[in-house]
Image 1 (spheres, rainbow, N blue to C red):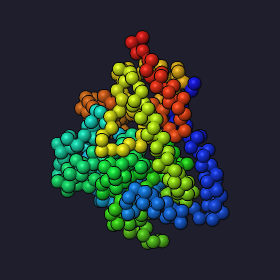
Image 2: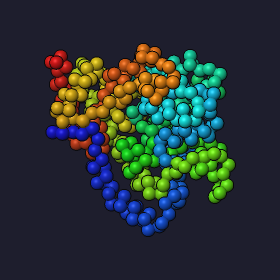
Image 3: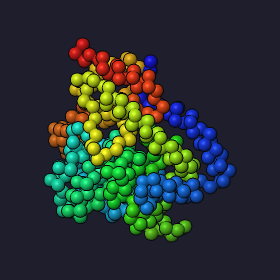
Image 4: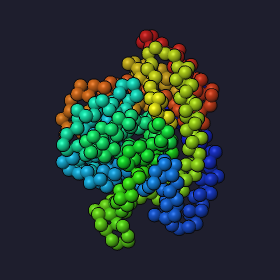
Length: 369
């Protein structure tokens, strides 16, 4: 049996007619930018998140950057970010001209540890980016408490958490603003690049809307030095179709994850830990093992696809050599980078495929090297 790391076919086959009908409708309209489809998606996704405003944009990185720009975070400022996350989180800070300040994660949840945040706050700190990594939410009560104490903005990086909840509230409605990615592999994925900013702050929403469109609040009237980062009508239409099914898609991911958690019994594998406050949507099912290279090779030989998230911690990437950080300075992020490996989890996985993954993981004999 072969089980790829991800497969879109089962999901897309189910909604193919609606997707094609949407494309045909939009093709006939001859309106491709900043039209009614984008406006409808923005309204629907804001409502889904439980927030008041949504502004579509080109991708998830732009979403975070636009929030930082909207809050006038710039050169000379610092922003707290997790040391274990995709590099886009830090890049957004750098693009805004500010400096990313890394805070180590909780080794069990992979996410930023609030107990380590205060020691990194200085008079230059302007915001905390809380990444809802792998589909579960960060410890938002403690993060918001710290932010309030120091007068900081809380920005959710919700690129992997479409539909996830924290104490009953959805990601996107847990801080001052949230950046979403709709990259095709996300739980809510477009058929290309797309993103959005979600917020309850009307002033921020209006500013972000202008910034996405060359800084223009109306045609040929530019109030900011903006960028071109717009969600197009076609992708918005596709996202509207998928949004109607998102909870159903997430429900199956949760079922698969529950089977993995209950049935994987391998003493060389550390399974992910989920907070009781978080209702995860399992964008990624990340495990850890000290014998990752052997484990990945073994699974590959048995037809099971895996991905490593992320093999080089951000502070050790060449892109951030200007920070002058050395190996050993952020040991928890480095340990996760050395040990993490993600198992297949996608809508449409059959019970047989899930059981096959569990079986092969359980019979793995890492000592037989």
